[in-house]
Length: 121
Image (cartoon, rainbow, N blue to C red; front, side, top):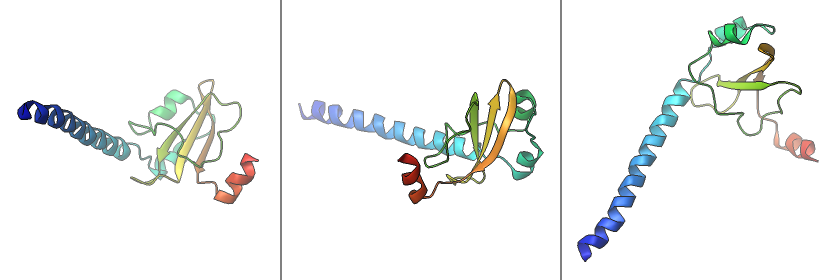
């Protein structure tokens, strides 16, 4: 009975530990592959086609905007975010597309807390 109790406890804890390590490793991998070089960012021009822009981008983008960034421009279809440096949450490069063309490119930085509160009101 003790052996069964140990297996019931040890097996799920072991599985959770392995999943945690795998998730951490995947996050580490994605973060290291989502850095856009400043030279490449400068070469990208508003009006470029999305297909042309994507040839100059890293293999991975961030899952979305980091917390605290200014809102995306109105009327865009999609924005993608890339790190400026490995493992730094901000600043980030933001590229926004509409109808297959780049319509906005910017360096996103945190909105200061006092401005964030004012924007929320």
